[in-house]
Image 1 (tube, rainbow, N blue to C red):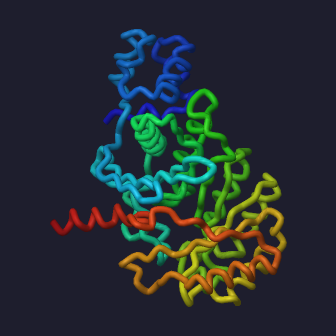
Image 2: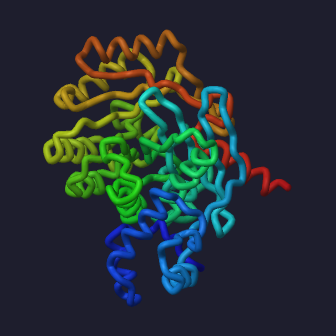
Image 3: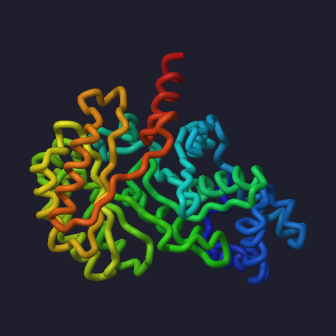
Length: 354
C-alpha cells in the first residue's frame, strides 16, 4: 500500500528526492504545492516535470482518508468521521474560537488508556496512526475550509482526539515537525497543544525535544486513590511518578502546563478535591493552569453525570482563592456527538449490529 506523502518531513522529502536522482530544489517546489497551494493530485503540480510526478504517483498517495460522516453544530463546530484505507474509523473536530480556527486531531485507532469516563476508550486500540494519517486530518479540514471560499485557515491544533499521543510518540513528533514547518503550513508551535494522560517517561522525552509546543496533562483527580478509580493509567504512573516528570518539564522549558480536569458529579467535584488539587499544584502555580471541563455524558458510562453549575463554580472559586489559575472550558458541539470518540463508537456498533 502506498504511503501518504504527508508523512514525510521536509528533510525526509529532500533526502528521498536525492536518493531517487532528483534535484534538491524539488523538495521546496513540492512542499509549496502540498501545503500552500494545497493540490489534491500530483498532476496539478504544473512546474514539476512529468518524471518526478510519475515517481510520486508510483510511491505515494495524497489521500488515505475518506469522509464517512460530517456533523455540523449550531456553534460552527464541525466533526468529521474519517474512514482509513483499512476500514478503521477516526474522528477529527474543527472548532471556532475568537482567536482562530482550531482542529482536534486523533493519533490512534481506539485507545488502551481506559479512562472510565471516556468515549474514546470504549473501543480498545487497534493500531497507531501514521504521521501521514495525522497530518491528513489537518489537510482535509483545510480543504473543507478552502472549498467554502472564505479564505479561512487552520490556525491552532490540539492533539486531544482518540488515543494517547505519547503512546504513538515517533509519529506524533513527525506530525508536529510537518505542521510547524515554516516552509509548509507554518502553524506556530505555541498554537499547538499536545495532551497526555500522564505517561511520565514520555514527558521527560518531550521536555528534551526543545519545542515551544504546549503540553496539557489529563489529571482529573487530585489524589492517587481517586485518580486510579477514574484513570487506570495511574497504576502505572501514579502521582509520585507523574509530578516529578512535570517538575522536570517545567524546569527544562519554563513553559506553562495546562491541567485538564473533567468534573464528574459527586465523584471529583467536591470542595475538598478542589483544596487537594490546589495543594498538589501550589508549588507550580506560576506555570500551572487548570482547565475545568464540564462532562459530556456517554451512554456506556452512565455511572457518571455532569456536575451542577453551582458545584462547578464552587470548585472554580476554591481554586482561585487558593492561588491557582483556572478557567471553565467553553463547550463546543453540544448539539452533536460532543464527547471525543462518541460518533466513532456509535458507527462501529451500528456496523456490528447490522
